[in-house]
Image 1 (cartoon, one colour):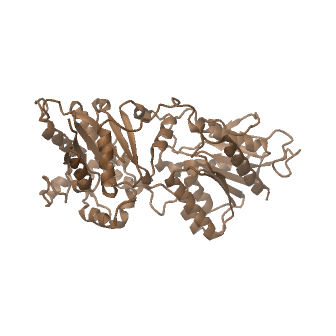
Image 2 (image 1 turned 60 degrees about the horizontal axis):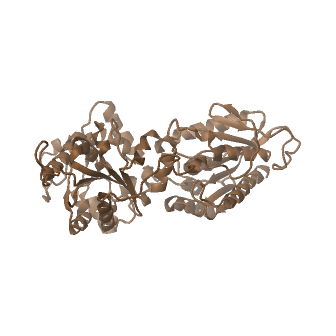
Image 3 (image 1 turned 135 degrees about the vertical axis):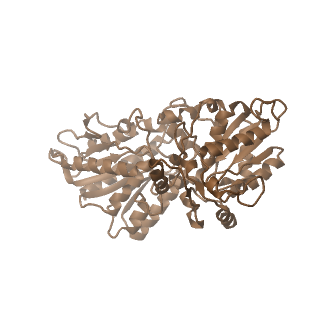
Length: 542
């Protein structure tokens, strides 16, 4: 039996966004029903171009309203619950529910109520919602998240969220690949989003968990399959379900609106998803050691760890080494390198970041070279947590500098991966004692799906470009096989550094992946880490 696709749009949009994809699916022999969800200024009843009557009532539409509308679309294909159905007695098992962006919430809610009639759920550039969590939690624009929160605190869900202007769509996701004409039409057709659709928690019985699910990841929006696998490897219980046998993934090299940027490619992926195809993730550890637990590439001394709160110290052995100038035979205060892990990392991840071989290994190696190696564990559990993580790091640095065994006037900070945005504060206002900033395979500007505005505090590229002073010396460890989205932030940072004539030492791992791993050339990593640490220590000596 050919699949029946029910296509549900995201915020501010209606069924028109699916037109190109629907044509391709229909040409392939599938049935298609594109749904327009209730809301003011949105066309109703099929192709009727006129807004629905009763704008006040439509403004009061909530998540339950939208779930019922998707259920009605399912019933129109299969018959009402308890009936024989409209698909030859098959129980509607050919129905594929497709949700984009916010649309995945009513899709999952409807699948939970009609689980026996749904063959597959497809989430287009959207995470899988959780029971009891309102859709507002998935809104990428962090400033927008705060606006309706006051309404929720007051116990009201009335009102609407205005649609974006033409230049504001990037606050909701990358527009990569969307033509100027399509963006004009998207803006002209955009309608307000009822606040009730964002504030009401999604309630699930658990029935939808048995329905096969596919995620379509739009890599230009910041997330690909490799990144999701890394998040799974970190042990987040909420992501464990993504490794189930019924869950598959596809990637599209485009922005957040693939139905506008590459409708034929999206249709092809939907047909393959309906056939059960796609990439399957592996449970943590099932395919070998996860990248973040891969052994540190260099030999390190077995030094005792001194743990103080969220900070671990590794002090050189008495007498020091020849790594830091003047350190050999000196037991006085030493310069320190503070290593800051990336993220977001799930709260309660085991082992915790401070015990990851890459973090502790760097600190021990630095201590073996005569500096004090320090690791900091911060609370970056979500992209909204950068302010909290920045406070954790600043407090840890104060603790390090206050230790009498540390030369508080010679400090270097080293950030990894998703910790890269934390560089911005130190670039904007570098203290005199900060002798060097380093970063390894870093994210150096907010990714599109993070929902941070262009003037975000945590934007190292902009912080470097706007600084009214010379930045500290910079050391950048760069991997040659980085994801294009992260690599673009590094290129932007280096361009800004060139314009500022900043001192930057770039150390490359030509065949290295983000975070490294068992498949990467070990000799390249050994040489690169050795060179990068040496560069940092040299700047502590300068």
